[in-house]
Amino acid sequence: RRADMPAVKRSVADHLTLLQNKRIAAAGYDTAPSSPPNKCPIEDAEALQEKAALLVQAAYRGFTARGTGLASRARARSEAKRTAAAAAHAAEITARAKLPEYRELRRVCGGVQVEELAGVDHDLKTLVGLEPLKALCAAVRRDALARAAIGDPPDVRAVLISGAVGTGKKLAAELLGRLLRAVGVAKGDSSTSSTLDQLVLDVRRDVGVVIVDSLSAHTIDSYKAKVDAVLRNFPKHTFVFVGSTHEIEALHGAVGHFRRSEPSRLALLPYKPSELAAMAEALLAESGYELGAGVSARSLETALVSTWPRDVIAMRNAHLARELAQRTVSSRNAHLPLGKLLSSTLTITEGNLGLDSQHGLASLLDQRREVEAELAGLTGMGALKAFLSQLRAKVEYVQRGGDPRLLEGCLNVVLTGNPGAGKTTAARLLARWLRAFGLLQQDTFVERNALELKGTHVGWTCPQVKDMVTAAMGGCLFLDEAYALSGTKDGDRGDSFADEALRTLLTELENNRTSLCCVLAGYPDAMARLMRSDPGLVRRFPSVIELGDYTPAELSSIARTTAATKYGLSFGPDVEAQLADHIRVSHAADIPKRNASLAVCLVEAAMNRLASRLGAASHSGHTG
Image (cartoon, rainbow, N blue to C red; front, side, top):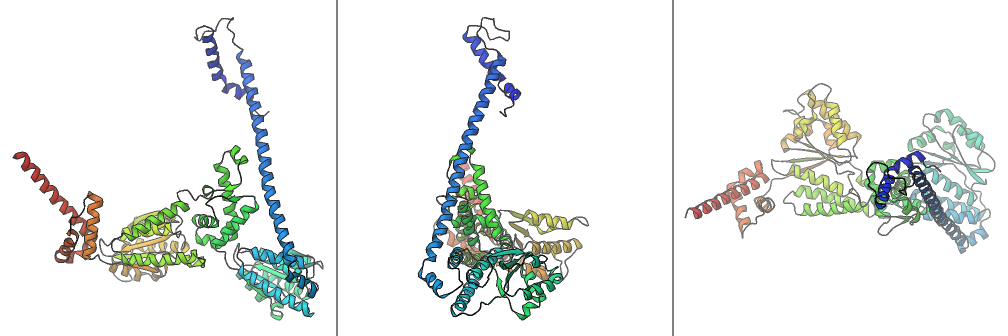
């Protein structure tokens, strides 16, 4: 019905012309542009166009009907999964309420809603994270049931819940309210949410728990008298105040009632990536999706830390679990054709998580194996290997369940070493290692000479530095010869452009301290002078890797590797040991000045002599 008839007619005109020519040829006529004789059995072109348009309409209606049917069946399957999950949840609670523990509570504790308590206990047991809430609920439950058993009145007091965004403050308040009603501490039939300005209006006799949200440190002083009066006039109600740590502390200090009756305190911690992955898996299951073969909660965790920096994870918490679930579903919808999408099962694959993409799990694992193999085969650089070994231990500790905040520190590094010690090689390998182990979010590696930070005109330096930092965001910014930003004497940064470049760089690194890794490289003495030129450098670059000079044996090994990779040649027997002795005797003074470049030059000189000898031998053979 919605087909554009004129457009359909125009689109089939070429096909109709071809059809006419075929029929003319079949009837024995020439297919020249001139009109065929009247006796040629050719249908009217307008009629054929009408017929084609009708066929298109019929096909569209058939596809629409099929799509509607497939969509209905897909929705039915999803709804059936949700219904089954809800029924299983209700059955588990019913079974729990029949346990001997709850039968005993029904007998000895009057006023306890056993079925509701069983439901709260079940939800707390299956809750992801929120360990402080579980500990508080266990203490409240134990005290309330003991008081109910011996006939003492319940201990009713306010609760202050603090935490960062997305740490589950509202969920904690609702679960705590359900528990208080179940054990008889809160006498009302329900809970309600309110704000400071509406607090008086929302307090009713049928409401046992009042959750006060949307606190603001700027308005607490204006409403502190009202809050104090409400708390005094409604002593049998439980008030749960929810806000950030700063807001809760301001409220606690402003309201006089809290000095007469100390409230319970609950401080919620940020979620770990593994907990957020478990939450995303639960959200997908609630929507009817299941994880496919090879996909687990660990896969979701990897997708999470590969997509968002750790400081963003700490700031958004549970909101990222929902975002990850929504992105996963959107990715699945984008990769499947409509017909297959509606007829296939609701299964999540690695492709939906981006785990088989360039920046996903498979790639990261391959990168990890590759960079570890390259690091193991690297000659020398013991300081770099020791530094990465310490980082690896931290990563493995977090992977085993340690606090992920251990990896949220500053990654900026100062690399020092004599000429040829491998500073650039170390910086590139360090950036790849950090990316492979998930400490950097991007493969970006921006390499610049520190002189490029300085502008050529007044006002150009600051934007130039900011652009470089922005270009490296999520990855690594490598600044070679960083001592160019310092002067020739201690405390003298040289020209004003260098001073502005250094101050702007420090500001940008402070503002993005966990969003990129900045590596400053240079000669030891010059870098020591740079670090003394500004106290902020030591704080923003907490790690210093000092690359020592290569030993003669290491230089001989580098020469062997250079000969194999650059020229495809291998050393003869005992050549590597003899070369090490030669370097020790004849080039010991050159090592601090040249390091690896000395080994490369020795190989190139040997190749030149080899070429000359073979060329001379070939010339002598032809002459003879």
